Length: 94
Image (tube, rainbow, N blue to C red; front, side, top):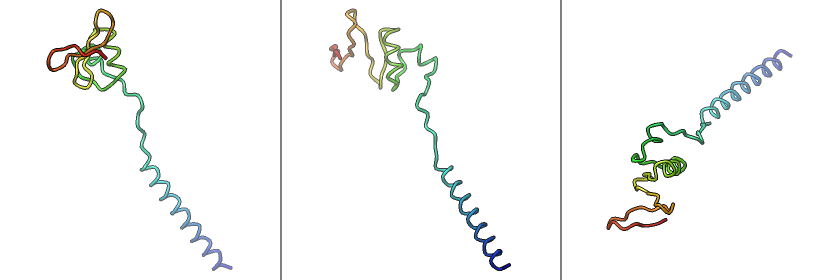
């Protein structure tokens, strides 16, 4: 009878050890990626800083009538059309 209890004890101990090690590995693999990254006040109030954030770009176009997006400066015309200047200096409307 004591052999059965001893074997049962070791089996339970092994299962607890295996289960806790498995949970620790799963916890290490889980990463939380933020979906919303707030932009800084410097980027919000300076349309000459290039951004990849589309919402910030639209906000700056509304506010300053110009904004740099992914290295290219966009402008808003008097007719509220958005354009950028090509390498030759021509207006390219979006």
